[in-house]
Image (tube, rainbow, N blue to C red; front, side, top):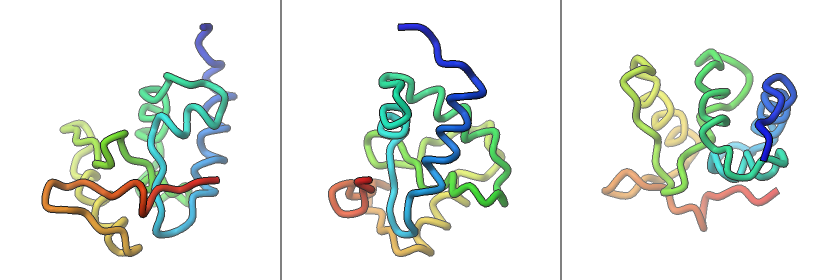
Length: 108
């Protein structure tokens, strides 16, 4: 499969993520598949990494396939910000740091 056009795929990602309602999450893989590029979850992660933390794009509503915040030393503390924002929206993490995707997973 050919790599997606960077600009087109990023625009799709941002538009799709803006549709995720408060209190729900999607996975990186789900966003990639809904944009027509299954198995490009990592690209979704890269695109959302470029979004400013105070952007109107709710980047914090996208988590990994395990229902966890993907931790990275490169984010300079935004991992904690992501969890804090999700909890402020009513999303509950279990003791292992996982979100119940059946309960909080967004189904467009």
